[in-house]
Length: 108
Image (cartoon, rainbow, N blue to C red):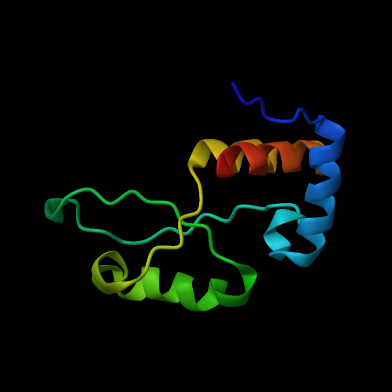
């Protein structure tokens, strides 16, 4: 039976640090959630959603959600990259190492 080589958290985190500085900035920046409230007619059904939007396209995405909900729901590529639970863990993480562990677990 083949055995996978053993590795330590220190080795994993060392690789993570290297990757995170060359990868997407969301991996190393603190996450600060912003709620977007929209007017929605409940007679048309329920709308509850979450999206992770980068700072670069936040304003345009927010305007689309607020002004043209139908287009957003049916014709916009979703940018969800996690769940509310993962977001909550990232928001309340205490340091870079803890954020790395959360991201790695979420990817796995």
